[in-house]
Image (cartoon, rainbow, N blue to C red; front, side, top):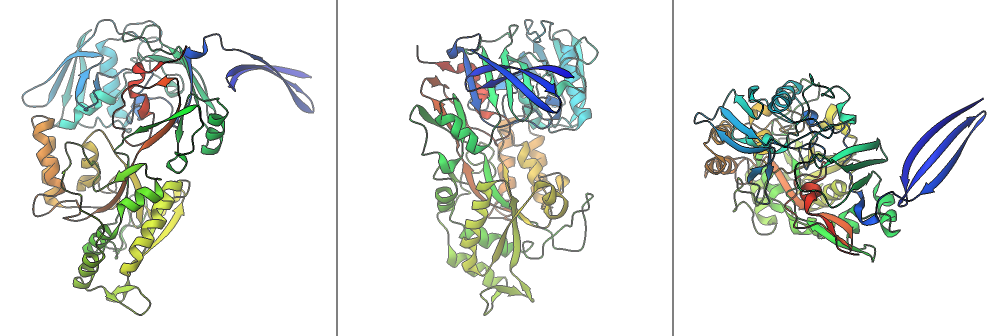
Length: 544
């Protein structure tokens, strides 16, 4: 008995055609190698991670941290993060800040050649609101198509950060049309972006080709092959000349193959210690996870840790120098204070804070307050070597204070189930939108996923955040975002409640073929997705 299956795959710069013959009791495979049907300079092979578990579905969050690739967005971001025309050629916000009206271009088509209309846009926003995914359109009351080229988005309250969804939410086809959105969309995306999906072998590779109906500039490369591999195999492939672009961990960023150049993309992709703010009163979150920590709920503990961390050393040791110190969730962005940073660690100031707060040092070297030792777990995802190193080095920095942070690696599932609201956790955030600040520090979002998992609550901070959302525009909102960080009396930052101890902002480091020019890169957000592809249309090959 014989069963014949055919399969195509990509290996070592060539396509493999394989016939698998099931001949009991074994399996035989015959593979023929043939060259790609396009010129080498028209194809790139990339190993930059970012394979989405839920597929390439914008309604579930695809594209929120980078370019959605297969889909287009209503607006795009310039390098200075200001909105630019995308699918929409004109846009306006009503005076009561409750209605967005956008005019669409008339030449946008999906990759199957059918026109993209206002009905598709309205469907996308309404469906995203119902899905409740990472694309937060909860402020939307209803989206409707006024005519084929005009869409109206009505909000239930002023939400200045709603404009960010206009720049990140990829438009999908209306479910009521042929080839419309369905439950398989994440694996078979149809959009109006510069590329269309050819084949996705989950956990292995993704092959995409130019969308012939793309309304914008034609990409320089006909085909892209995204290889999903671990750090070791990625570096081996790069040294073997099998990759044109590869993400490189900071620890290995100085040992690149001779034929490759190092590309460093500055980011606001940060790492920091989130502290549980509430004491342990035996309460549990809706998930069942315990809430509170009697040590980190003490302001003096949080402030002392902030003042003793040597962030420059953390950058050198944990990031191999590829990064910069972090003092907030949005260092250098317009909605963050420019004077939050302080010079160097201060052991004397940290010790004084603890002494004043009644934390007494005992013979065992630890501090105690009312019999409670200054000891708590510092949890990090066990699979993340950078966060592990940050946890271990920061714990050693804090030890001379008489505070014992215990670095503990756990699986994300275990963290969510048992530690999310009770342990101090090494988290990573970083966004092109101040909406993230709202999520991290507004009491309304306490216990909301990974965001305000420390149950931080400050009514004054809430009022500043709400004033920012109700502002007439982004520039008018910035003073309110900054006041939430520190208004001279209180705030979520280190001068106020010190709800986090931010540590570092990572550089995103890549090894690229010397012939690949990736243009002028912007500032990257947190590393989900493919932030480096945001300016993909500028990429080109420089060699003959």
